[in-house]
Length: 196
Image (cartoon, rainbow, N blue to C red; front, side, top):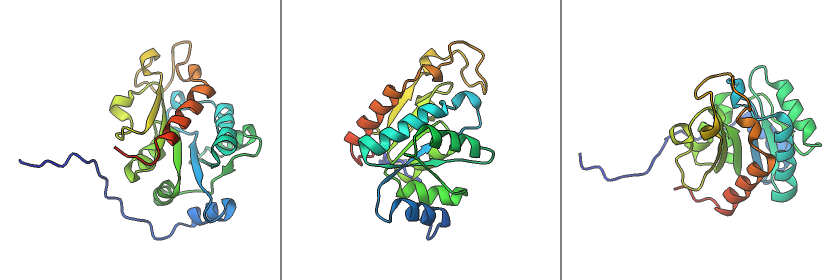
């Protein structure tokens, strides 16, 4: 039809105010850069262990100068608390958030680290730099579209493609190390804000 535009755009309207983002800004400072750490997922085999997310949170604070904000959804308060505890107080637990809040928080974040789940896709839609963790789902299908974003994937080693629960050993996400994810974060930060 003669359309030449190759850009991928999601016209999500700006969120004029978000009590959750305001709470985060009060906790970290009005201009302090922060990273979203999203440890939850509806599928159990998409969840990287909370102690590893905790170590990642400490890395984000100590090596990257970003305050890690741990998101959580319904029933995930304990998971967020476990990540925070494993971070040795590096991580700040987010207040309860709506989808609208997630849009505002993702836009304000410097980086989002998440498995294949809603907050990752919202961050990609609003153009926030991401590092994504993939196990049973294919990042070629579900992953970010920006070339600068980084995927840490174990899809090629997974024996449970698109199954909600793992039934093979070793668990593919369990083979993903803290060093793997920290290296991906360094790579994404080095790429800057490039989105394409």
